[in-house]
Amino acid sequence: MRYDFPDNFIWGVATAAQQIEGGMRDGGRGLSNWDVFSHIPGTIEGGGVPDTACDSYHNLERDVEKLKELGVNSYRFSFSWPRIIPDGTGEVNPEGIAYYRKLLTLLKENGIVPNATMFHWDLPYALQVKGGFGNRKMIEWFLNYANVLLDNFGEDIKYWVTFNEPIATYVGNAKGFFAPGLSDDAYARQCCHNLLVCHGETVKLFRSKGFRDSKIGIVVDVWKHYPADADNEEDVMSAMLANETEGYGMFLHPLFIGGYSDYLNEYMTQNGVMPEILPGDFETIRQPVDFYGMNFYNVLIDDTEKQRRLAEEHGGGGNYQNRPEYHTELLGRVLREIIEEYRIDVPLFISENGIPQVGLTDRESILDDQERIEYVEKVLKMLHGAIQDGIDVRGYYLWSLMDNFEWSAGYEHRFGLYYTDFDTLELIPKKSAGWYADVISNNGLGE
Image 1 (cartoon, one colour):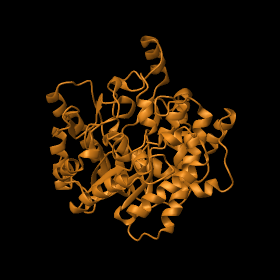
Image 2: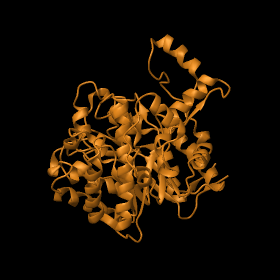
Image 3: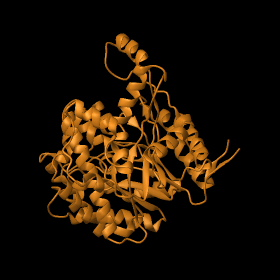
Image 4: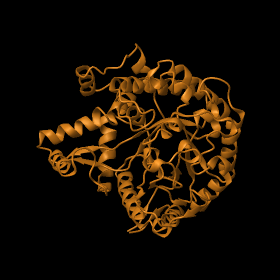
């Protein structure tokens, strides 16, 4: 059996500025919250820092050459706010504008459609010390930044994304293991609310520009939790909490339905973490978008009894699945349920998908990434079935083009189609790169 995708299907790869660019203080760039956070001892696995990363700032031609080798027809990347406006609000950095202009020129010359994210977690540190997203002035600051991007790059970008995975802002302010490293649940929820207002105001700004061919959307990751036993109240509540109070429901409900869900409102009220909400906020947040990007990596099964048992065995705390089970077979179900529950009536993209290589040290083992091929193949077959069933998925972006700085996991987790030698900065194709190039060339895959 063949799995042929629609003729106009988008095949791409995704990256993020903080993870690949490096050049931390080059070309007039300012510091980001992640630059500072990563230099705090103990915050990053293996002690890695993003100062150089893959050095894409100095190697754009190298990166685009790899995109050409793969044959992708779209590239999802992000702008670095501290490279565009080093202090977040002041003078625009011409070298930053020139860097992204060069990238867009190279993409256009090679027939690769840009899919650009305005904010992929790297907040200018100068704004972090002013309160970050917890400061309502962030709406003004972000709109100024968005306006600079739209005025400089506008219709040169086909797909604009306001925010990637807003949950990272919650994690960084409530859980402490992402930048800025705070542990204040109430403050984190205010940050998320203000971020959503930023999104809505940015969509309004985008519409005011009158772009003819460019589209705008947002990316929200979905790590959907299901109870291991639907008759076990503890399992059911565990999954509900994960989905609705610390997961995708916090964002998809206000974005597509309006307001926060009754469940989330009750939770935030009872726990004293309700953010300040001004009149008109929810109307602003619920601006119509042109597409929704869903980052999908896995489905999680909540078995509370098993977790208790493992906690006792391991001394408490943590996720004890060193090699997690990947529930790719549930992708179609997740897509259908998310669309129905949140009344999503716009086209979708799988805007990130992949698995890491962890614990491998020799190059040959890393280059032979058969496990990644098997995982992506299963995902694509499930995605094909969902499209056949009528779900309007327009494209797929594999995470990631190259091994890079994986946030709190540093350089210990390798997601790339290309092996990055972090000493020489050479990019070497893994087995999966050739396989994915064949999928793209054939617009699908066989049995």
